[in-house]
Image (tube, rainbow, N blue to C red; front, side, top):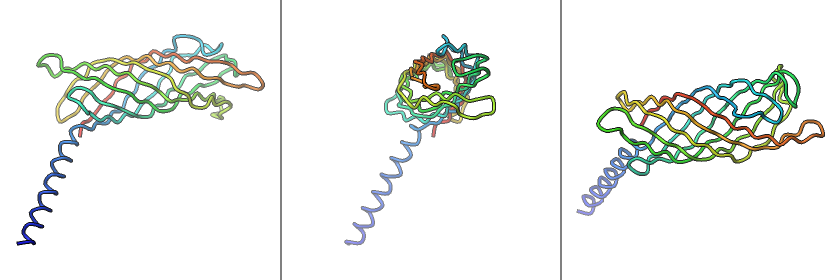
Length: 195
């Protein structure tokens, strides 16, 4: 009798864990985004050309329409003339985090989403040879994003959107410290999969 109770207890615990894992799986999603970046102002005295980049994001849905997310991104800009010299490249890389609200639009397979949160990024200045000449070090910034999500079945979504991102850092070139504000308007498209 003790063996039967022990076996039923173990079987019950395994069943509960299986149900919890199965329900948790539909709460997790990953997303890959790529897009075009437009600097909204000069970076120091550098006029940045149109840039591009990508992000990888992992989300956990903790309420019906609300998720927390975190990820990593890389965004590249070139500049013909800047405080760091001619023909320099600027790369903003680092981490992204925040909250996403995703809600259906009626009975269509179309949703809208809004994201808000922070970034913990740094700005690197690279020569035309690819050598890093200056690194700002990581610092906190903020971002806001919105767009549409097209559900095309089997838990896949296509997510075009627009984002505004802001990061302020100090960059030291030689003995001169330059306070820079990187403010970016980004149009991008992502593809996501829920598990």
